[in-house]
Length: 162
Image (cartoon, rainbow, N blue to C red; front, side, top):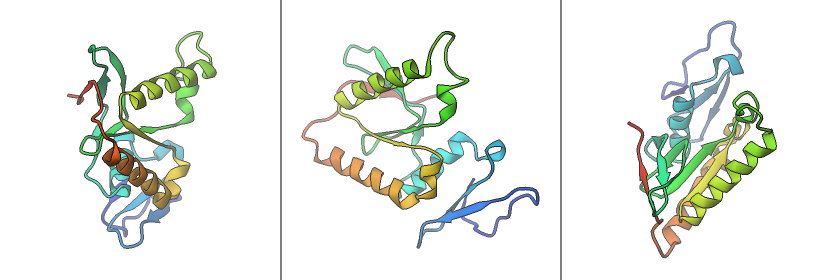
């Protein structure tokens, strides 16, 4: 969970690892998989890693013809940067009937290619990446810089989740 209070303790039966950015007023607690922070809480923690306001969650993106290209895990609207959390579970138990993991990876790649082609920047991370917050922050900073340097605005549009 994200908290400004690093003295928060875990349940006695839980082993916690605290990661903190030097000079920042937050920490991210990762517990065993059964009690990890919820996805939205983890995303808001990523907003803190990126030193930005909390991102929009579950934003839908559309091409110039209004066709939905996909939905992002998070979106820094002011920067034009989309983010995706990659967990192994979406290539396992969340596969559609008859779908192979390689099929899911390929469809994900096509979706990301379309979003990048529209002019959006993309940052991806997984649970292990969150043990290196400075590295994740650097990815965001590079994506923000690429978007600022771009000579045109992304095409298409987006709609925030309601």
